[in-house]
Image 1 (tube, helix red, strand yellow):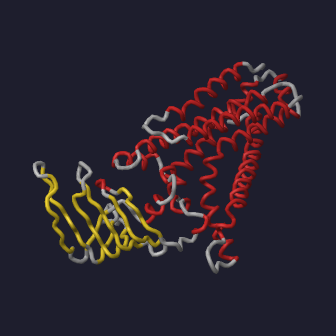
Image 2: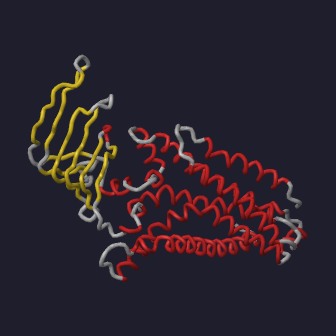
Image 3: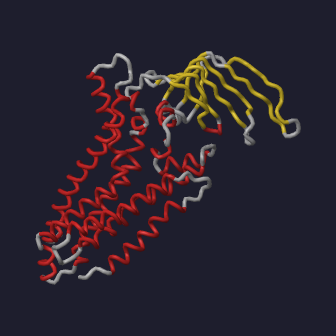
Length: 369
């Protein structure tokens, strides 16, 4: 059963969180639209209605990505605004006079921060991977009308898949080329097809496959003594199929820069087990996924000591100090994630947690309550 104080603070926290969520996401969208508005109108003959539709479609999908980037700041703003208002109205003084510790006041705030951190985990592990193909779209090709080449994407069994053209609208591959490799990375076979159509998994097949038209298979025998043998080419009888993990959605995602960030932890582990991709980048993204919710809590704990005070004076000064300290924490984590790892070690991602987490503990211990 929630106490009167908890219910009162929870209502204020929810209201301020809704305000912060709407304000920060709107500001993010407005700034991004201001920079990239010309890209929505680059297509020839596009109407105003189509431009507006593309803008709404693009940003409605990317809101979940923006939320993952701003979640910690939104929670910090909501909690800080709630405590600042209580302090300004002398409500914290009344709470202290009733014998309630300021640490008791901070308890529902921290609990609320943990709950909103759960929303961040839900967003990054389920929501973003489910809409990754939409997030991967460029500003100037929201409707997917532009075909492009596919160049050497890693597939199952360490194969490399290329195509002269992939059409996002029809979801077909033209002039498909699959390089099949052995354990040493040598090309042991080459599968070519003029056209490939995707067939998703069903009740019979657990994996999807591409149905090939005018397929040709060139293989080479491999032996330990002689190495690669002579080539043997033959035309594959129709219908021919190529089982693949590269669905049209997966191709669209992998064409995007930084596409690994759109995957869930389970998908990252599968990609890591398959090998062939940038293992250092995968390790960095996995560590960043663990660091993000922890850093959000650290930022909240950093901000609380600036507002847990019995004095109503100098609130703006304390808010400025809070913004500087928490801003340094946020910027340092952003810089650490921007560093491209050359090895699987991702220690730089954890350095802001160690530094600012220790600072938060010291500052919380110095609260006069």
